[in-house]
Length: 394
Image 1: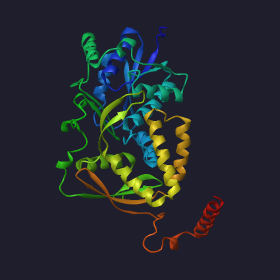
Image 2 (image 1 turned 90 degrees about the vertical axis):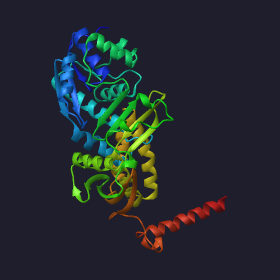
Image 3 (image 1 turned 45 degrees about the vertical axis):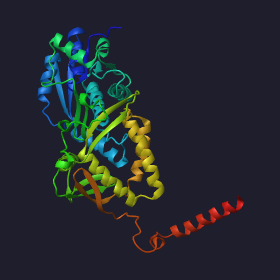
Image 4 (image 1 turned 60 degrees about the vertical axis):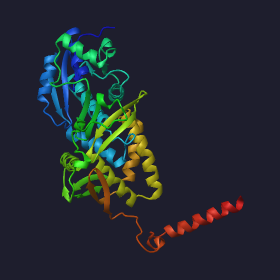
């Protein structure tokens, strides 16, 4: 059924599918398209991207600065959870959740008829857009790429753009697909198809080659309060400044690279190369502090739920009840995860050199039982007796 002509708010990132979709909606279907550009700390100016959207047929553009919200409301809770997906720090799925929240907000506020995106069916991002927006507002109509577009190969899409005289980002290549924000860079590169070969060094944007990193190690101290990072080397920093600083120093020492084969949501495997220096440093320090401050059973459940939390985020389920329920657990588990951790960065490696906390459960030298809180020793004695009784009954 042909959709009525109306106003469409389009999530525009500048990729080949985005430019072709905006062109299709505006010029083939006669819809008024407004392109929303999300500033998540991509490291480049968004104004040229807005001009590209206008050239493709958008009536106007909206630039939303989401950097603070992205880190405070999405990334930092994920740090507290210790959540990853197969070792990946989730920079792209967290960004998609942030963008979807903004799309729904703007759509409601300005009265758009639908939300559009250029993510192809069967891909991770298509599922994330559809799932997140549907969870936030099931009444909003969603428009994906044109049906004929999804059947084309990437090379054929570029040829289609040339035929339609649809402009592309200067220097666009069908060999490289990049997603970048404050939390990291994810890349797929045509040269990565041979999984026996290492990624080309010129692929990396945030990190230097570990072998070319400084010959002198760097010691760094991170401070956490209730599971959230608040300072670097005793200097309090807001989330944006903190992450930018750690990306800079971590990148200079070659930390935070990940080259792995990833299991996609809809099946199949893909090779992805990620860079996330700040994430690597913060996760290393946070985990060290958890080991120091969490009781054994709590830490065990923390790790189990962190894995599920990461899986939910990867699948676009940030706005699900399941994610909210697990988040309630982390609010309790992180109460005592406060203190300082000293890290050493050296040629791509991160080593924990020291940690301290007012909530430390570490016993130190001597008899560990002497340092237990009042009442704990008595409970241990009762537990031992219970084990003895069970053994006798066998």
